[in-house]
Amino acid sequence: MYSRIFNICNEQDCTIYEVLKDNMINLTFRRSFGPLEIEEWQQLIASIGEFQLLNEPNTVMWALEKMGNSQ
Image (cartoon, rainbow, N blue to C red):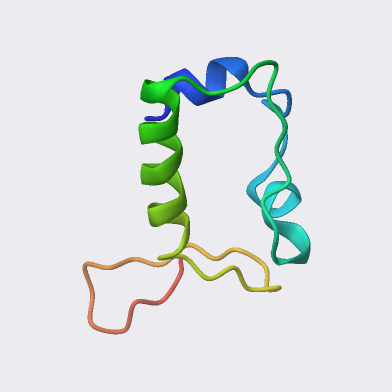
């Protein structure tokens, strides 16, 4: 989705947890951003703000039933 900044990112193999730990964005890049990368970066930052990471194991939920129980 953010291919321009991904292609110049030094941390391409990091997890979301590693990138967002300590309530900071822990990324470095091989070069400065141009106008298109700045636009992608602003979109990425806006989308990150919508998520809240929890220190809990991931679970699979079945959304097609009322109970939503994992199977």
